[in-house]
Amino acid sequence: MRSETIRLLNLLQLLSEVGIAVGYLLGLIPFVYAWSCSWVIPLVFVNLVFAILTGNGTTVKTIINIVMAFLSLIPLLGYVFRFGGLLMSGLNLKELSKGR
Image 1 (cartoon, rainbow, N blue to C red):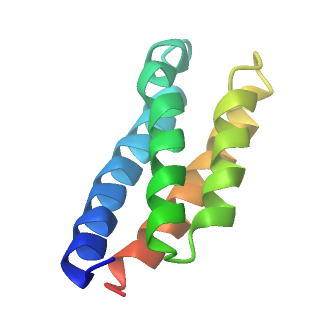
Image 2 (cartoon, rainbow, N blue to C red; image 1 turned 60 degrees about the vertical axis):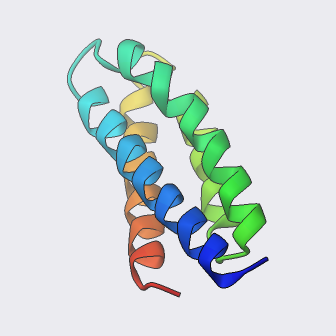
């Protein structure tokens, strides 16, 4: 793949990772995750595709984030997984912002 394409995919992954983090953050408000999961769950799969295509080292954390997104649907215990998902998103954002 060309470097411009990889750079664009990394930027798109960075933007979608911000959306995921915002969804997890909003999900810490009681009952809001039921709404925000409507974009968090699709975006984690989109991020997985970006991570696989670019090979930017975020694939494992993105797979963990997929698990966190679904486990976040568990009542009460889901808050723990939302914090975990927020942490994974933060780590991915840090990795992607390095500008590899």
